Length: 312
Length: 145
Ligand code: B12
Ligand SMILES: Nc1nc2c(ncn2[C@@H]2O[C@H](COP(=O)(O)OP(=O)(O)OP(=O)(O)O)[C@@H](O)[C@H]2O)c(=O)[nH]1
Ligand SMILES: [Mg+2]
Image: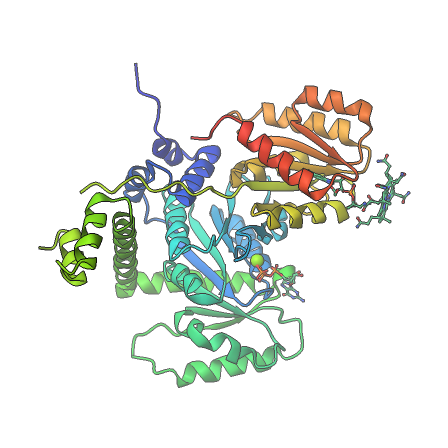
């Protein structure tokens, strides 16, 4: 008799319902998650992971939908992780990205999952990147990650992508100024969406001016600025080509490996931080003992910390 | 060193709210969406005019705890019949509870429950009652692995 297939095996087999359950596990960090991810990690690394970020309402979900349609026409399957903020007051959320994506339904080559930020310290980034691992291992050719471009947590998430598109829109006053902080450096492609609106050309030239100011080393990727009208799908074919070019460029220059190493480093650090956080809490006898020792001046905080994590 | 078992924090209940067919009444479903969010739940709204298969596909991908269908068009009987046909065809039995809300005559409620609808929350249901009902239905369901 053969043993029943594990969840990881069934994810690798491409069963949609099991992929959905694996994503729930990852989000809840349920028991067994680490073992499942360990198995999936070995099969991941083939997908082109694309991050799409930008201000609220800039048309990210509409653009992701148009991109997915374009990839499907080219015969490539697409997994989408759409992240929306949780309310800091109630912990609840209305996850609205999927509403825009309804034209993608009925196609087994597309999988969409909404994720709430759940306000956890760095927890979002970790869950989102683990979710990417699940979809990547399950065999999706392209995995797209949508996040609102605000806050460190979202920037952390996007840093796990291989190609990052930063979406801006014309006529948001000083729109370019708005995306400057933090987002400019992480863009591999700039998208000026809603280019049917007045001022699109101005936004494009502002972005180009800004990119010219950034010091570019020889052989470095030349960050393009693409114009799109996402709800009509225009400019999206060109955008997809830029992502492909970026991937080819990364492969030629060893950048794909560099980014993979950087992402691996970040994820090891997050995993280690979580282990330490779980270990150093009231209720762990060694921790409680150390607290007593330090409070009663028999030990000092730094020495106790080193001892607790096994460094002495 | 083995870390102690992490304290279990209650996970937010995930709810999908769906509008199916030609029914364009979305005031109620939007009220319900905000009510559930304010009660700490994660709500995924499908938008108007979805087909039963689209809704089930989305509910499976999102792995929700509750699928709530809002219907004020009078077409609830054929729509729920179709919905449960699609559910029966899934490769794996679904784990979410199905809840109905909107305008439905009392005499249909029994038939809907026979089909598999876990709760029918009609017109003028107070927000607190909706929250309580949904929590109770989720907690009475078999625990998820
Ligand atoms: C406002 C309204 C409209 C508005 C809708 C605006 C909008 N965007 O929503 C407009 C004017 C557009 C409209 C149009 C029509 N309407 Co109208 N409309 C109403 C009315 C007066 C109130 C509905 C409402 O918004 N209530 C307020 C909200 C908050 O309550 P609710 O939707 O019932 O939701 C509550 C509960 O039901 C529950 N709930 C709802 N959904 C869900 C889901 C879940 C999961 C849960 C747990 C709970 C839950 O929680 C909510 C809060 O308590 C009702 C009559 C009535 N008293 O219900 C008729 C009514 C629904 N309409 C009706 C009709 C016939 C129409 C039209 C066909 C009229 C026409 N001939 O043109 C069109 C159809 C439009 C369309 N495409 O669907 C009929 C339906 C008859 C039937 N079911 O057999 C009704 C019942 C009037 C009647 N007595 O004849 N309508
Ligand atoms: N005029 C115009 N409107 C667009 C375009 N792309 C998207 N929109 C509209 O912009 C609004 C917001 O679109 P979304 O795709 O939800 O934007 P988003 O960035 O995903 O929004 P959040 O996830 O809430 O941050 C919708 O009403 C879209 O129809 C475009 O190219 N031109
Ligand atoms: Mg969006």
